[in-house]
Figure 1 (cartoon, one colour):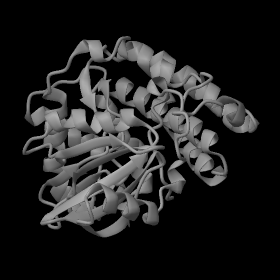
Figure 2 (cartoon, rainbow, N blue to C red):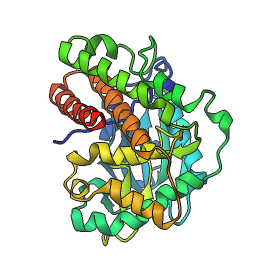
Figure 3 (tube, rainbow, N blue to C red):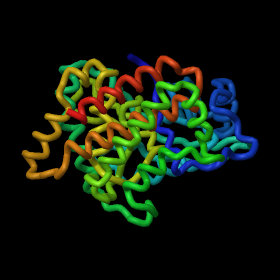
Length: 326
């Protein structure tokens, strides 16, 4: 199974800016023209990079610096990247943010470029080597100070709000599209009911969450000994830290290296070694896995033309529901 996913963040999305250019129209030629004008002809070696659904990225050199420019219609995504630079440290390396600005029809952000291997392409041996560094990054995110005012509703309500199709949201209209398949519609309803039943086990926590760590957003060193960069914080949110664990356990079947290890058992061993006891872990993990599946059914229905992806996510969601009922 293989497809590009993207955390849609509908609960915090806003209306599309008037006159904004769709992300697919941010071409290499446009990037070259912008960078040439913006930096007075000093930007060289411009090349397209893998990007998500909400922005287009291009690498370039400016003097002796390797940089990345991203173009998108959503300023808030880039502002979150700038916010995340405050999290950066030896165990959670966030690229330095250089600049945020606006063109005549879009927004752009420039940050330092890093090189390495993407987390999801690692084989079993590499994944095992990087696990200690990955766990340290997750520990760091859990320990960062946060302001409760940054999430105005309780964590459980925030999770439910994500699954509401509101007119004018960034991904509005997905519920009607999902209902075009009676099987997927029934699965969504059943999955939502199962998730709601587990919400009481999920405490109202306020930890830093990336919510998109398996989408070419984490680079590791070539020897897989440490993380090189954690970037694209456009889905930055605040809630229960077990959600990040669910991200890896839910998506494991899509990645050979990850699926070859027992991520759940490994993180529990790590927490036990550090005297961290997580109450109701199984219920919380199941709740968040269900939420991830439901959220991505919604998002892929919104995008359209992704019948294969919808079928794969639906199958995974059914697996989680079946396992939970045992």
